[in-house]
Image (cartoon, rainbow, N blue to C red; front, side):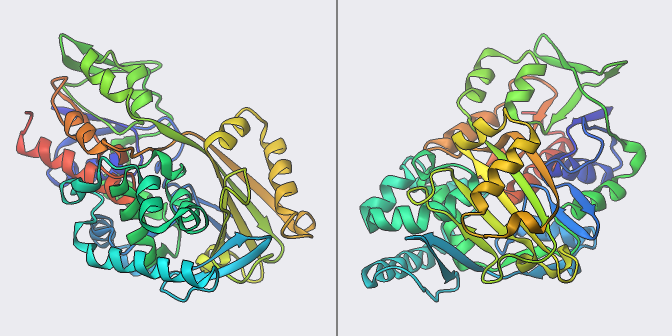
Length: 429
């Protein structure tokens, strides 16, 4: 039986890697020229570009296991966890291990109180075992934070951190996810991969075998007849298969497959946040105080976060050079998606000039990634949605991706491995 995997993001690649270890006949079909999806390897002029995915948190256990399996674990390096917050027209550096350098005395006390709550509840925070934090699943994160710590902690501390990690606002999030993100970013080590996070996708490709992966292969249709998959239709051929794994974003899957009504209704309840990711490679760094700068929405309306890549990993940037990565999300990203790359670059450089006066004169080159379906939004009640998604709606159709639990690299790896092991066991319930 040939198993067709649609999409060669890290989830699809992990599934293929797991299946090939059991000598399963696999073919991975990827629309783009390179594998990796939002964990793709990009390099130019000595710069290493992490596409979308930026960090590995210390509680990404499945990711670490996979990195060890593909012999990439020695390339995982600790990164700076200094963050600067923009407040009152100044940058305030906060060391995420606890050295707080901004805010009133009362705010500092509340942040320490929040850290203590995270410490006490550490065991319930898991990106993949959602049952552990189910008591927080139905609560709106912004309301929970405001109730326990006040509006200033929400707006100046929690919102910029969480929004930069999941590309949406805390009003849209489940408390379980928001607390899990805070626990990872505030209490766990933060890592990068010296040769780029996308290098794990390249390692997986080599492990699987190039002959099992077909890039530039756009699947036009997943053929379903009488609630059974028959194969996939490409531009120039049809591949028969009674077992198909989709690692595509759910809205794309819904467009290319005639899914049962109940399944489509569940998919329609899962929203995605759009994102613009801009790399600006510079003759020299414009910022040396922290790895990232976070902009609270009440201070800067356009919802951006900035990473100085040379502070994240020295190996990502040639000696003496700098690279600013800018993330734009939500409504601002929706507006920019309609603009040309050149106009987006001009708009963002104009914004950055408010903080870095000579940045325009230091630009070597830039690259823009437009992502219509950035990250799934883990809203209140999402735990119940994931349980429904695991139901067998179509015989032979399996799902994997970061939407299968709390959106993250960890979930992408876990879900790919999980679906492959399910097929190996012959578990089609």
